[in-house]
Image 1: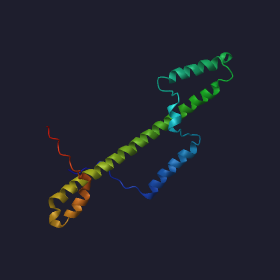
Image 2: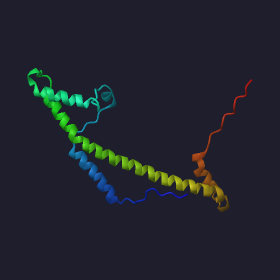
Image 3: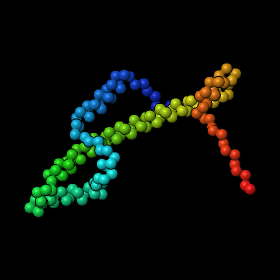
Image 4: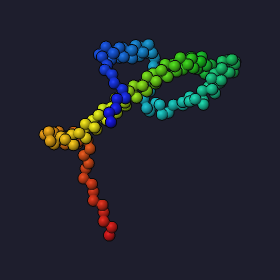
Length: 155
């Protein structure tokens, strides 16, 4: 049964515009960091359940500067929270876009698989009559199975 979940042709201009948009986003956010795995594993994360605690604590510390030691960077924490608030909508929008890209790739690949499976079935049915048996065997290598080990006989 034919399948056509998605079909389109991308022009070189569309691809160039997409890469241009990515480059523009990267240029607009020059302070983004990439953390190596070894750095990430030792970090303390602020997850969804920790965020209210962090926000309330920063607010209380900001309102009570007389108890805050000079070594504690409350202003830095406030700036970090503001940056989180600014970046979060950007990340959400990019995640939606990446999800759409992933789904589109999945749908395109599925369309190709359905077509090729149907076509391979046709090669198996009538390929030999048209001199295509060697080609069918060549493309059918994807389905080749290794030799199966004989089952051990109980002694």
